[in-house]
Length: 124
Ligand SMILES: [Zn+2]
Ligand SMILES: [Zn+2]
Image (cartoon, rainbow, N blue to C red):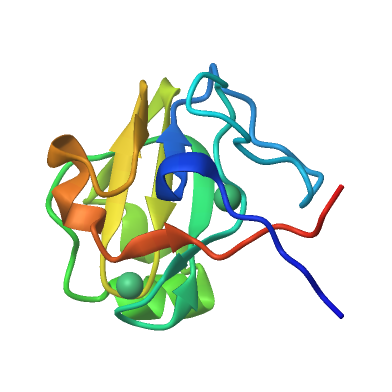
């Protein structure tokens, strides 16, 4: 039996001042915590959401995001991102989002990633 627990409010994304938990069991238990979700999943392209530290987007999601996701091809990123210590970049095969602050998915400010949700964490 594999009971999984989901983050409060569907999961949260955040900048680098909110450390990315390495333990898959760590999650946002209450709306008051400040934990970013490490199990975000995109229900649009059926992909786990990946992330990069210290990277900020310069454009809306590029057309070759799928290739960039699958190959992590550094050349693909050159013109579309810039380095910024405060930002964490999240991306799936169909959309991406970078932020220095902390916010839930499914929020007005995160409508570009409305298809992302916490897929659940193993009980700790
Ligand atoms: Zn979560
Ligand atoms: Zn997607």
